[in-house]
Image 1 (cartoon, one colour):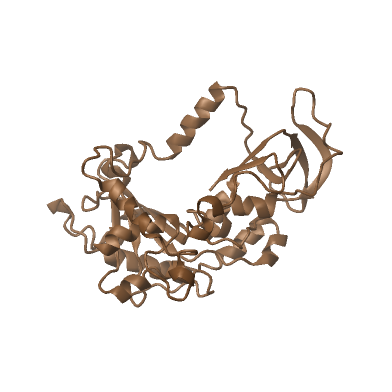
Image 2 (cartoon, helix red, strand yellow; image 1 turned 180 degrees about the vertical axis):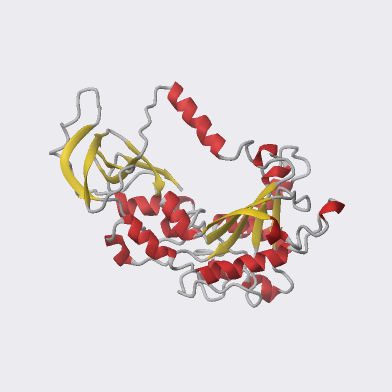
Length: 367
């Protein structure tokens, strides 16, 4: 019960157990204050008929599509296949990301009075912001209507790096499986915990406690770990065709280990180097362990009595994401989808400000 009530701490990048090796038991860094134990109570409170965890029909992409539609109705203009490579006080530099090339590209400078940065904060501050450049030579290149101006300036293609002075949530390996059977033994949200003993329960959080020890990837029976399974089709019939299913499995893992030399490389080359931190053996061991633990689930349909025991035979299609994948798709610092952790050292007043300290007209909304 203690393990079940404290699993939500993982969502804010913290562990529920006291760390005797750190100041104040680790609450400044990666140990959750007791108040975070209320997260489970808020989701399950019996007097609140709106309690629980909800997801939109059609997946979270439908939320983005809805916001885009509203923005267009308000006159917002969207530019696609554009990658921002530098942010200055007078605007942003972009390159055409639909063109495949190496070396340097001609860039477009978009003047702006206020710049709202949706990129992940540690990535943006390290990789995009250039507070030293005033752009005086480009300042008047825009037309009076504020349209984009193309300059003859060239800058290196986009890069990937992040500020590693922060504490981060755990990394995640995600298995996305499309199956030819319905998995009725699973609910919408499912948590698989290791809690046979206090020692095993503490070890299952080791990816948070030892996230930068360089020993990234040892998964198997000798190393307990927790994981989460989402079966969207339980509440969203659009998630899979009739008679089939789709699940997402999230397994906490360590973050990417920053290599400052990779910041000098083009982004694509850097990402490929970071992908090596999660090799095929690591992924295979984790996958096998997850399948073995899922085999104990009892299906609700008598016809599917052996479906969970033979789950690997029913996987039609598989996509696997690692911290390197999330870095590639979303430019998140350290490859973590949950962003900065929420220890007291990074909570409330101690969390990075939404307004840039270096460029006053830049605001952050990413993670």
